[in-house]
Length: 620
Image (cartoon, rainbow, N blue to C red; front, side):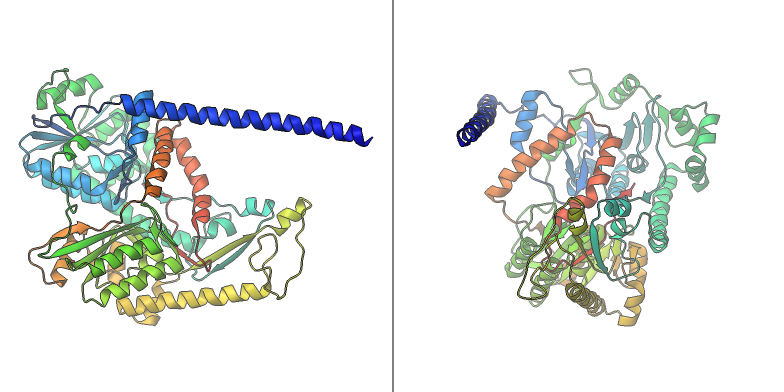
């Protein structure tokens, strides 16, 4: 019998070896094929000829992907592979400052006759960014040159920007989507209950709604009331700008959005005709009619198209802002803090406590830097990492150099934690800020495992020996300790803001507890000093430093080999996803489903405490 069992065991062992060998061979062969493909592509690749941009033509302002304050470095391998495979992939990011630089230069460039807005691939953008770009377009029009917007279909954020154009054209089969703005989240309480996950929630602040998706099936009344305040303010800003630029009445926009069905019925179901009759667009043009119109405006090139230069090609020929090293005569440093605040060193797109601290330390020790502007675009994150950054800010301030905060679309929770000690805080009227409150969330899976017939048991030397063993319930003693630590952290947050902003503690308590404010209201409450752009903040820092003649320069950390490798692989995947035929609606649903999970997976605070405002689902 033993021999029989041994023989059977040997048969399965050899089958396992064969399967393992086939798997290893297949993977190695695939890797070798990929390596040969990459080597062949690199050796046979010849760069495209540089486009001549000295001719007269339209600057095609293609705003592709997300508009960001700090752009991920380009991925040459991804571009090369996509070129070889014939993929027509668009950039997944467009640098905000690049857009402003191109518009400003085009206004005085005799070779540029007009600007054509290309907004079809515009993805995520802050309303503050769109508003600033709109102002730049208004300045461009003062040069006497036209701005043309022409699309097959206008999504809301694209139409808002198009409203700053002199003329707006729409495809006869297209339409204009104006629907208002809102914040809608997915709520998981029933799903968590069905999975028998025990979510241990600790939070301070009636209005701290970041954790509501895991403890409720709907938005709380408190969250709805405070969200409606800033949502209304942002929508009022958008409609005011649109009606001013298009010379429309607010009532016409209200009718268009609130009575779209009856209005569409009046227009015979024709969305393009409705947009024209409402005054949202100036004309309807097919693609061929648009080509002929643009040829008449700019002239015809050798391919029979209108004369044009693409944004990225134009950028290669013009001076760029804030890229030169700090000048010895006086310079303002600019550090971009964009993304979730996490512990340790983090790549571009996230704010690492250590990596951000290194940049602030660099500004402190550089004798050529006379003042610092910290550009914050963040809903917060780790309390520990936020405090590490703040400690570096306090060390910087000991030098006597001024520190000015410039807030982007959002600078809330941990983003406000690191802003409070600044000499001056500038924000956009539509910046979302405040959200002074913290939380902790620890899921345990003892009930889930029990349901599967899996149990955790053992012994320890103390009642805390199991610590945060997620297979066991959190002990009452640990719960009490976390709660005490949480309240201490909240009190610390209040003290930081009270001291940094010179706001009475009792008065501050009334505007804390996680409340979120737009820039205008924040300024009235003393959370913000002035309303303005990054340029305004730089001028403010220079004034505080006593500089009349100065330069401004970005301070960025050097890229490591690890960064380069990660960029190659992440860029390849991102560009592949961008080239898929998944509908925008499906991609939006996937993003909404994965966003809460992504945020939780990123959390790495050593004490498990977070100051974060999760309004990443704002729909413009």
